[in-house]
Image 1 (cartoon, rainbow, N blue to C red):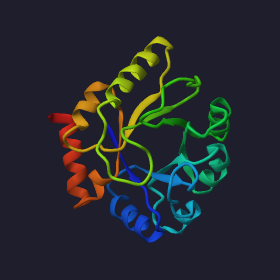
Image 2 (cartoon, rainbow, N blue to C red; image 1 turned 30 degrees about the vertical axis):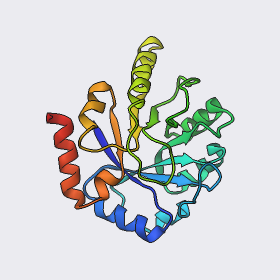
Image 3 (cartoon, rainbow, N blue to C red; image 1 turned 90 degrees about the horizontal axis):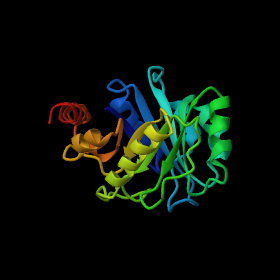
Image 4 (tube, rainbow, N blue to C red; image 1 turned 180 degrees about the vertical axis):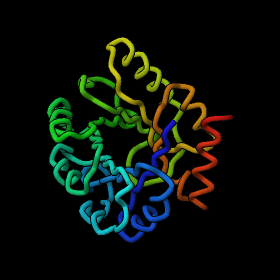
Length: 213
């Protein structure tokens, strides 16, 4: 299982501090983007990522929790994102979004909030992210209903002969990461489980538990 730290911050300085703490420990970092329309609050200006030096080793991806994620693709390209994931709830055309990202030579994904039914997945989709709890700012536990959605995705992928990766974002910790992996999850997006405490120890523990527990 791949563990990807997530950066969900209103303040750029706090985001930068987290990025610098993990940039030599992981290959990929996800930047969460909230526009204040899709959900309450608003994250820092995405373009500020380019101010951070010595991050050439990092593969960036954006998770667009915004109205019409297609309008944020160019901003994601501007920070050299290699993967762009759009939240579906305020997306008017999933096929168009996926195609525009793919046409830019990037990986394209869709994200589904905890209460959103899974449907309408374009064939070219590279990643499907399931929110383990309500999206946005907050620190709630992961809801067990996500396991039913994971199973649904595993079956859908097999039935349609698709090859998208399955990720879960929200509420992941060392107590549930192995269960998620056993259920079919290939990417664990982690915020608090990485950054609350010493990040190096947290990443080692999450990796160990997912592989051995």
